[in-house]
Length: 261
Length: 206
Image (cartoon, rainbow over all chains, first blue to last red; front, side):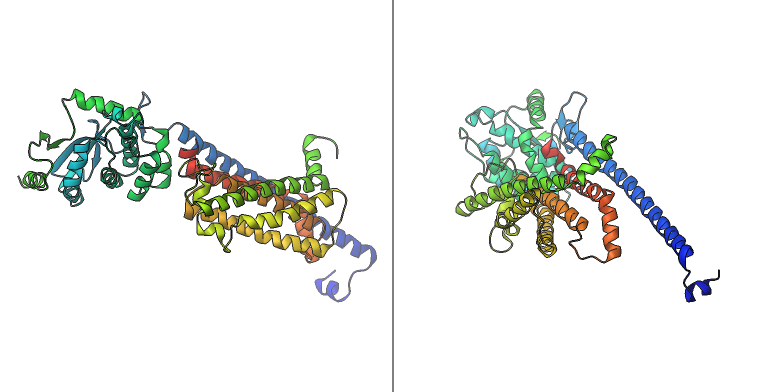
């Protein structure tokens, strides 16, 4: 039967029924193939999604997303040096400014408020890199709330994300520094200041896990073992700076001298 | 039909009892969440810094989401809409379980309104996820339950021809639902949302 024929005179009776049944069977087959393919593809995507979810849970559990985990389980911020400092600025900067501090120590606050912007400027223009040792030996002076450790932990968490943000955060912490023998800043205030400095919300939300508390304790001991006797201790290229820490000028001049020397 | 677990499960999923029970339970969950969020909205209106029970940290925080402009898109808390709409769904589900059959135009209207609600719920989810950057457990419950109510409502609409589709589209839609592909689709959607939330917030949640 030619095509023309079928178009002009429709087939009759049994022949027509047979054709309709065949067409219906073909359509059914096509639908069931489509359904089967959809199920196979769908289950594959489901397996993938479950895999991604499980993988990120396992990753978070093992702490891979929160700093560098050593064999002994110690979590170290990504931007920390072996000497126990958070390193901020260009690694090959000519001058290295090292500051040992405790976020509760009043003189550290005074030092920061006087010299903070000069140091930040030297870091920003690449003249100097800054090594901050956030110590926790004044923990007993915050009415049992361990403010030094809480602040240092938050600082380390932000530094693990981004060192420059951490510098801005430490300036804010010192700008609102609580007095000794107060309860220190609340966790909520610390979180607000970190957000204000530009730390992302997931970094801030992880502060309560206190993941860096052991690291803070370790570097505090490390600092005392290396001969540090108090804070703030400031070094320029490894040499303890003996000039006036509490008036603007001398430290900035010393950095400039070291850069030109 | 009664041989094997899978065929029996599939038959159960296609039954009125299953569909309307899912609808009922999901609508009740949605109503509960809407109620809690409405109360929270009133507390927040009185004191924007109020400590809500679900403010667990900076990320899991109903307060952060509740204080956003998106949470009162129409000038009043979105949750009020749930208080209005979910009782209607509950009524439909209970009546249908009791054997009542509603006219097609009625079910079509319910479908249209609920579809708008679903779009709104997902818009809110994406706003919270990408813009507000906080998780609100009650809002997530609403995303989940709205999805399930929508699924069961659509299941009925397609099966009973409430959508006034053309014969060919209707046949395809029925084949889709008959092969349980709607269930697969919803499962993928919910898995996708779970994956989104977990990958972004794993460090906070676990």
